[in-house]
Image (cartoon, rainbow, N blue to C red; front, side, top):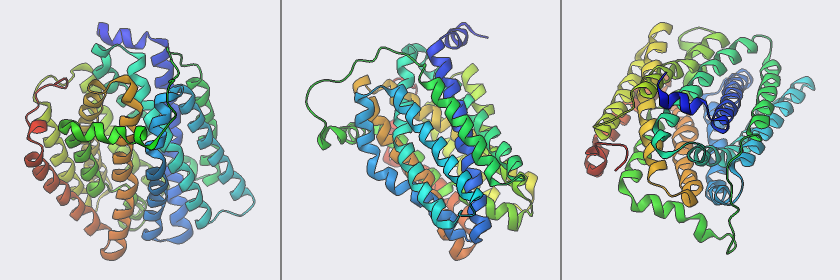
Length: 404
């Protein structure tokens, strides 16, 4: 273990927050697996699977910028704790609905709206909190280490959710509530020097300041928009229940394996980046990673075998992890603390567009032309985006180090 890594793990605020994120995201991943399989059990509709993502994205889009402003004013640890507590409440509502026989398509979509709003606050809070818990020279390692913990939860969450689903969706939702409450308790014990923001009242001009900040810094704009369009087109997560049941002919356990595969690849890559952080040619590596992500998505779309599908998804996870580390580290290093919440909110909009809106896009294309066409066309579109962004943002492509 390197001295830098030992110093990170010796910081109680950072390790508590790391555990809180781990428990919270594990619960979230289990919840997403259960919601997707639950919806497909109820409706057998690719369109409805896409709607789950859309119903999370639209409300999040409406409240994310105001949420970022609040993150810059309020205690970020308490905001995070409140978010995971609401996630626990959502899971408990689903447990009760199943027990009463009232679970339905409409309930799942309504609760998807709640989860979208929750994440609109949670993502900026957790992104803006990390730089307050570690010194700047250790931030790149902290981001990579956090990514490792996140990927472990993304691996374990879907796998555990798939296994528990064999006992019924209620078992998954109940476990999600317990883990979410544990995450909230840990987050409340994360202490840092918080200075309440004083001065003029909150305004839309302040809320929109993060957009202006990102727009003026083309390297940052290029990085976050590249990631958004790459995952928007190339994300195949919404199609996994269809692939699991109808193409690969497996059950909830297979779906959990497919959901976990990208995280396995991302975990391996994040461990490499924790030990050997990116030093040079970060712009070229970013674009190469996005292109590999697209090609691996094409391979997944063509696959008819479970093992090949899992391998292709693992490659997408490894490639995406490089993008995540580059994007988040550059964003944190180039943003002053008083703006981090609002800039993180802008980043959350890009992530939400790529994930939730990408799920809707994949589901809609699959409903029209089939899941294979959706995955293959999306992967090819991702490669084209990487080539186009190389020309649109030359400063990003030529960037040598994370700190400009």
